[in-house]
Amino acid sequence: MKIPNNMNPAYQPFLKRFSIAFFLFFLVVQSTFAQFTTLSPQAKASLITFGPGTDLYSGFGHSALWVYDPVTGVDGAYSYGTFKFDEGNFYLKFLRGSLPYTISVAPMAPHIAFYRAENRSISEQVLNLSQAQKQKLYNYLETNYLPQNRAYQYLFFYDNCATRLVDALKAAAGDSLIYNGYTKEKRSFRQWIDKYAYKQNPWADFGMDLAIGTQADEIATAEQATFLPDNLADAFAAAKIKTAAGVAPLVISKSDIFTAEPIQYKGIFTPMVTFWTLAVLVLALSYWQISKGIVDFTLDKILFSIAGLAGWILVLLWAIRTDETTRWNYDLLWAFPLWMPLIFFFSKNKKPAWFQFLLIFYGFLLLCATGNVAKHNLVLIPILLMLIVRVYYINNSLSKIPLKDK
Image (cartoon, rainbow, N blue to C red):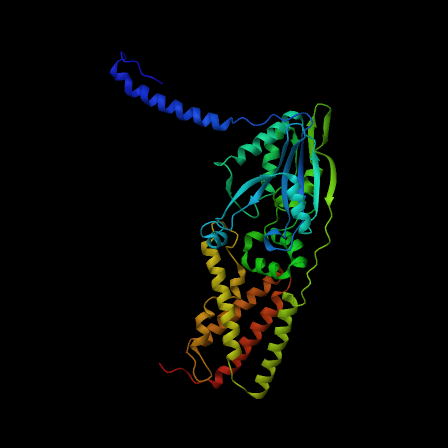
């Protein structure tokens, strides 16, 4: 905007500021109302659900919204589950929960080829949207795909590749949508995880159960339960939409594009088998040591060092996570961090005066920890059994150890 030469000088600073503000407003408006392809009446919008994979990050499935228009050539499967391995400080950001996720878009054919190669099921649910609603959905997704809008803060339970699609649908359908979420059953977030991970990858399930805190034990609401793609697909199937002809199902049709072979864990040494085997060995060794009057704490230094290190890892996750997923973790009752290094403060030749009180305190913690055994699908039972038996052995051997010199 050009400022006239004959304008009163007192107004020139104001006009300059107004010109700058108008220019910035114009840029924002231009970005907000970016021009996207106008879909034809033959366009369709579908929810695509991909089944679980064998890798940890793919073990719960995936969802995408597919907009396809044979007339205009639009063919985009929009996914909110993309992240980059070459992101700076990748592992630190991953542990902290601050790794940025982005929306990505690609034609459907490569998606089908990729997921078929990974033996992951693919299903399509065509959505009963009006022409205007399809256009709104497409514009919403394309707006999210703009460079300045792509990245978001991923939250596994509350804001992920599945929940973002509900936001997109609501933006497109507005008050016409009748959506109640997943209402078939109620589970805690941890129980939903177990449903997938316990049979497919029991070690991953054990690791996740170990890391996440009490937040995961909250019962997920019907809408929160759609953080899992399969639940999202069921929620879409049960949803309704108001049309000119009345209330109708949200999903017009469903088709299975590819049906995968069931995933079965092929390993022999699951956490349950492994820890029960170790528990039997520890029980046998402890019985032999007690019956023979043998005082040897080599096993205890190994066992309680591992428990202490596990505890410090849980404390670290509690401290560095940006969300509350790993906070208030009751596994710290048995994975007592201070065992590392306190377990090395005594031996069969000497003991500190305070060690007896440490054993009493830790025994109380183990007693409290027994109330949490269901958290790990009962895998915690052999772990607690080993720790309790060795605490008993140490306490039984204390009278044979001379008090440490002051």
